[in-house]
Image (cartoon, rainbow, N blue to C red; front, top):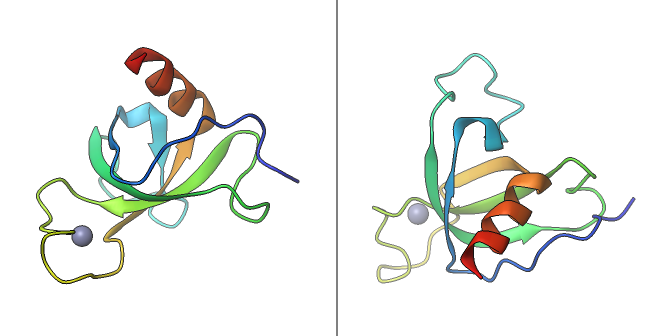
Amino acid sequence: MTAPDLPCIPPGTLLRLDSEDWYHPDEANCDVDRTVALIVAKVHTDSTSATSVSVWITGHAPECTWPTSEYHPPCIQLRVRCEALRRIVEGQR
Ligand SMILES: [Zn+2]
């Protein structure tokens, strides 16, 4: 299954996600009902990472010093709804 019609989100893009735009399947009981901001490192559009509903995105918190400090693995990984990505990209045009 391939990701349907996902907008292109270049690395370095700042995403602001409302609480309903994203979720983390492994942290259902954590305090995740909140808005989150992340700087995109990678949108995982490969067939094992993306569905028609949501996609894995890895990135960094805005307060993180990446990429001005030494490289480190993305400190944020979460699933973002495709619908939210389209809305965000269209809103930036
Ligand atoms: Zn980071």
